[in-house]
Picture 1: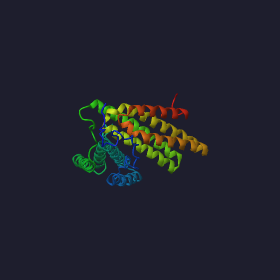
Picture 2 (picture 1 turned 90 degrees about the vertical axis):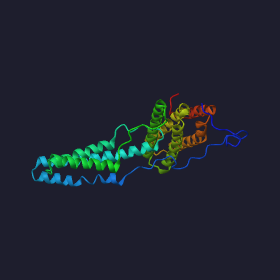
Picture 3 (picture 1 turned 180 degrees about the vertical axis):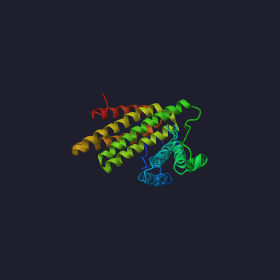
Picture 4 (picture 1 turned 90 degrees about the horizontal axis):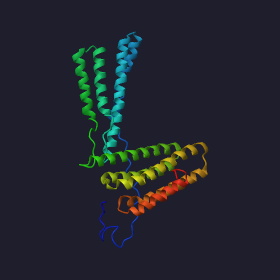
Length: 300
């Protein structure tokens, strides 16, 4: 197990008491939503094909209508794939250790654009095979130049693919729990409570980033986060469902008390989580588990 520097001038050096972890900085680990105006404009370009297809339908040209409406559908799907691919790329770049997106959405969007433009040019605009092929290839090339390819290689701890895979899988699971928690928080319909839960999620993400930088403490961190995050998610989901029906002030008070306990617990111990103070951490895990058991959020 790696040990951190602990000299006399270290904050945790000899003769100095353990210092509490600094407070979490708001928005410090929260990803900005990645958007692209160019990608959004892709939704506008196919609109003329939609009206052309309607016009062909009114003229009684079913083949022309099918080609133009099919091209419209293909280009709209390509626009959606491109926008989703940009979001997935942003999530990939925000991580220190990550696997590439399972589905290369931008490349699929490129292929759909090429096929759609080729089909419309050949069957509707009468460009001929070679002309339609050239236009399809040009459209695909323009898409790649504008948006680039999807990430295709994993990134992480050099020289240790097994460790990279374990860390990436653990962080993926934890991020899923965080997303589920935030979805449940939005169902509560209270911005103040949602803000508190977002801050708890930010504290958890601080640990995610630290694990990605130094995965040697993954086992201890994973156990703590599983208790902490799963407890927060389950409590939030149960409270959102109950409070949405009853608006029970007593239930709200109990939930806020649990949030305060989690804020204190995690805020005070996230430094121990990443340092060689396993005894403190094991005690904290058991205290948190007992607190969640009392609220019926984990099995005894």
